[in-house]
Amino acid sequence: MPATTFYTIPNNASTVLLSPYTAGDSTITVADSSMFGSPSPTFPIRITATKANGSRNHFSCTGITGNVFNISVIDGYTDINLAVGDKISCYPCRESFGDIHVAVNNLENKFSQGSGAPVSSPSDGTVYIDTGSTTKKLYVRAAGMWFSTVIS
Image (tube, one colour):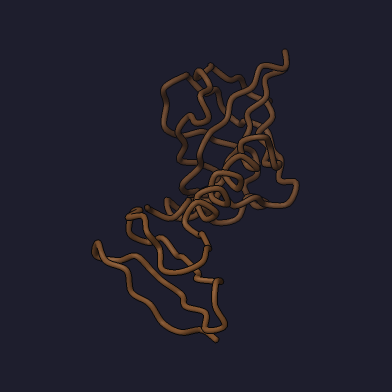
């Protein structure tokens, strides 16, 4: 399972659009990018664009050059046109916490414990702890086999 890409959250970063954005474009130009850090494809930021009428869109920003953000629409939003002066901000949102929940749930599903050796054949990367005896064993599933070591 690939590692979760968590969006970096710059602290209360906010600016406005300096030029109009047409749905489908891959960049936006803002008035001041200094608070948004240095996002990359490995460490993107999730930004929210808010129109004067309250309509919103989420973008993944994977790079900033000057005041130009490289973006793509995310989180199931429909791309919308934006006007000069529309707000661009970066705050934790429902999707930010959803990313964390998914990653934690994936980790929880990879760990189990019981008495004796594991009997199931889950996917590689699963960790199982034998808690049924005084000599505890840690099992790790890799290359389709269980590997174990004594841990106490």
